[in-house]
Image (cartoon, rainbow, N blue to C red; front, side, top):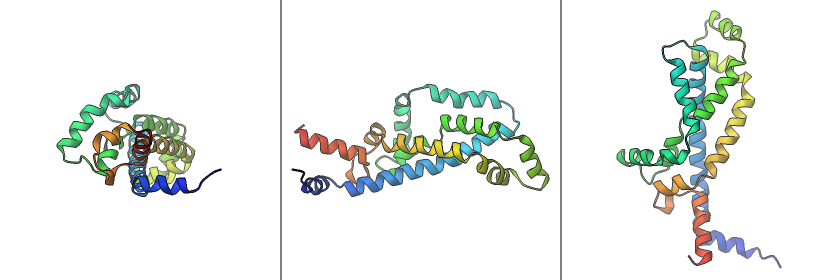
Length: 187
C-alpha cells in the first residue's frame, strides 16, 4: 500500500523548500548571465573585427575540451579570496561564461545573412540594437536549446555547490537529496 505520509516525512527531514528555492535562484542567475555573455561574445566573434579574434575564439573553444572539474581548485581559491564562500553567487560565478554556448550561438549568428545587420546599421542601429532586433529574433531556437542544456546541467550540479557551501541555508536540492539518502542509509 502506498503511503502519502512518506512525502511529508521526507520534506520534514531537511529544509527542502529552502533547497528548492536556492536551486531556482542559482540556475536563474547562471542562465540570465550566460545568455548575456554568450550573446555579446558570439556577436563580437561574428561581426566585429579585432586583432587576435581567432586566437581568443580558440581559447573559448578550448574551454569546452577541459573537464569542468579541472577548474574547481582555481575557482575555489578565487571565490574564497574574494570572500564569497557559502553564498548563492559562489555557486553561480564560475559558470557565467560558456565556451559551448558562445560556440553554439556564434554558429547560429553566422547563418544570419550579414546584409540584415548592414541594413540595420544603415538605418542607424548600433551594435546592441542590431543584436536585439536582428540577431536574437532569428536565433531563438538556438537560445532555447542552450537554455535547456544550461538549466539541466546546473540544476543537477552536485560537486561544485557542495564544495563552496557548508550551510543548509544556501545549499541546493541535489545536495539536500544526497543528505536525505545518507541519513536514510545510516551513513
